[in-house]
Length: 217
Image (cartoon, rainbow, N blue to C red):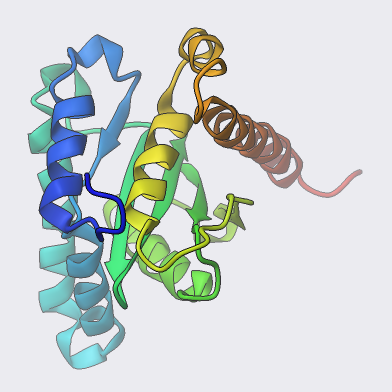
């Protein structure tokens, strides 16, 4: 990667494929990474679905988004189930950001990580992801928690792709990886992202417990 260059989608896809998808299944810890075209396609289909006259056609195609994930996993043990973690690179307006989908017992939390906040409307991103999830997973949309992670902001107009790759590494590494990376230049960034992902998961568990418990007697 050259300093000052904007990362194209094929470069990010290649990195995801080489760094993550070629790992043995047991090393991925029930995680999956969609390619950089997935969210664009999902957005188009949700826009059609929101229009009543195209709803049926769009719903059929949206179910294929689920199949594309399950098929790419090449994992017979999944039995058609989606992985617990799905990482979604988002591209538009000449800018990259990252969304995280965390699935747990037919409930979910969604997070948006953006190194140049204000470029995208997180509500629009969450709407697309919620619509897709509710059509391909028996999920209660009312229990879907959403949030924006506090990511270090870029100081230029071209390093968003690099930040997305850093987010992917930080969000998916194990603690043992983090201890090694702490002594490198980018180490603290990875640890900060990992800590936020863990915090979201803890808050989500508490949120679900309170929702599912119902009002006090």
